[in-house]
Image (cartoon, rainbow, N blue to C red; front, side, top):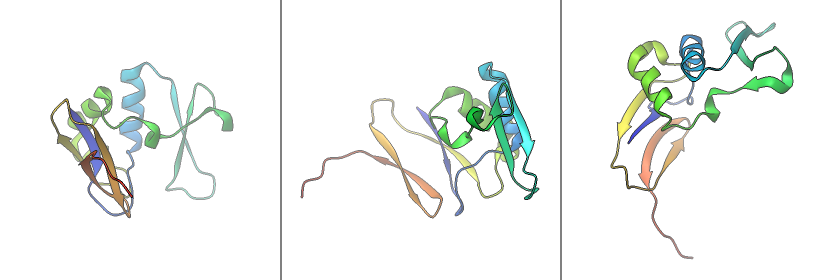
Length: 115
């Protein structure tokens, strides 16, 4: 299984090109709108520019095959402002989670813990 993670402090994010390509491949009508005050921020909406129609790339499952395809296709052009995306491959039968330290991510295998 392939999983997309961020390998840079700052946090997971996709470029506008990656978000729009993801939407095209998924059959979603994603609209990009530049923030009126902070020009380096882009907001995304599904179908219509309304607050309740917001779309956040951070909500995409990191093992979504379309997300993986977009990152493979675009390479570094898929990176958001504060991200350096990497695809990690793990065995399909592993239960996993993403550990995040100040935006820098690693994939960990789930295990049991008792207190």
